[in-house]
Image (cartoon, rainbow, N blue to C red; front, side, top):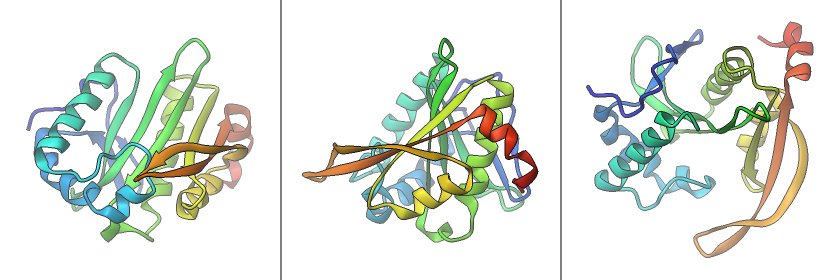
Length: 194
């Protein structure tokens, strides 16, 4: 299995139920199946759709190039003991000068409602603040995606604004919410986190 990312300085991130590690060439089929689901792509800003294997491989290689430049960190979300890929979590637009990055994530529909997104995002936030020294992590989600809003709210993200018609998804302009979490708020909330 060849790595699709080259972030050599990132060891796998682990949680009680998950491992976040590099995407590999063998993941293309599963990514195609999970991210190719219209229900998954519907409320995401960056997943290409329709998604066939060729498009998925090209997309993942583009992500790997971004990772190699140090601009981002795209990690497969895998169930820790079963090993199956359930989604992807990302820190992107890593800005070392301003010590901030965007977090994004998606989970395949068979794994919805299990709290896996929150667990993965929590691990990525910890990595961003502790290992990367970030001060601010922000996220975007479509207004009509309350599930992503809940994941971010549970992690302590505060709503900063509404970006009207920020993206065009399938010929419809979508309003997008921007949320952020500051290091000081994350540190202050540590006793309340699981």
